[in-house]
Image (cartoon, rainbow, N blue to C red; front, side, top):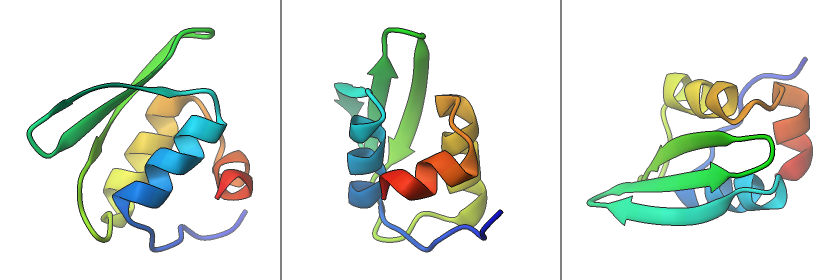
Length: 73
């Protein structure tokens, strides 16, 4: 299991899109991404660099493992 990379919100959104998520809406500086089958929804804050805890939470909410997420980057 690798450590968490230091990535920004753009890279995170692109990785989630590769995992089957699509842009639902944006409220202020938060992008809401959704996958319909199996259902999952997560919020990605717009930042140059996402804090490690926030990135870990996004990965957990998406239903992906850390290794799967890293392969999508």
